Length: 226
Ligand code: DX5
Ligand code: ZN
Image (cartoon, rainbow, N blue to C red; front, top):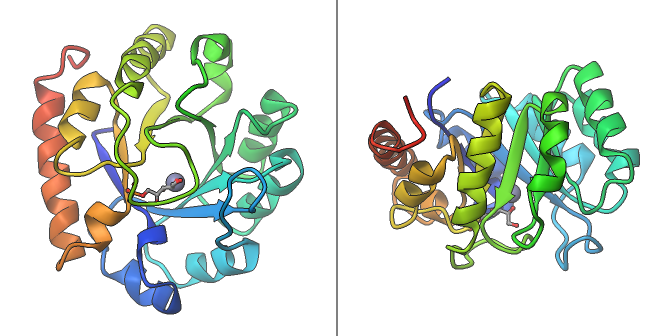
């Protein structure tokens, strides 16, 4: 699997979600941010809206849950048809059981880490996961500046994934743009979420194409890539 681009609908016009999804048909995933106003200080949308997006989009949906008690709620997003469901490890009570439940429901299981959460304690969980999301901003809002300090953790995560066999995707989310995507690819990311960099552009689909080209070039020259 090469690099993948996942535009975040958070930066789109919420009154026209299906149209906004259709503007990025050349992307690989549609990233949907679910926030509950508890795990993060912001409230977005929940299962009924995610279900409507899934029904009205040609792209698979990558659901990023920034919610408390994902052990209880995450399964509903897999049942609604999300192809990938990512929960935050800081909020999960039983991440292994949760990842297994998501896979059993037919979704890819993703686990997210906030910028200050270390990756090493979770090395043994990699076989249970399809994707590891390293947040490159504090979760909760779009349009925040990229946190360079996460790049060192990203390199260590890439190393852990390579030693494990490389099947786990490494996603970055937050502040990913034409200015920062090459640094992410160089450090080991292969799935790139971009909200404002895509939807603030005049032509979101051209922005996806440009980000993809940059990430592909940087990946070919990346030290971890062979
Ligand atoms: C923030 C969300 C992101 C957000 C990224 O907590 O998880 O997916 O949409 O937005 P940008 O790309 O604008 O930083
Ligand atoms: Zn997100």
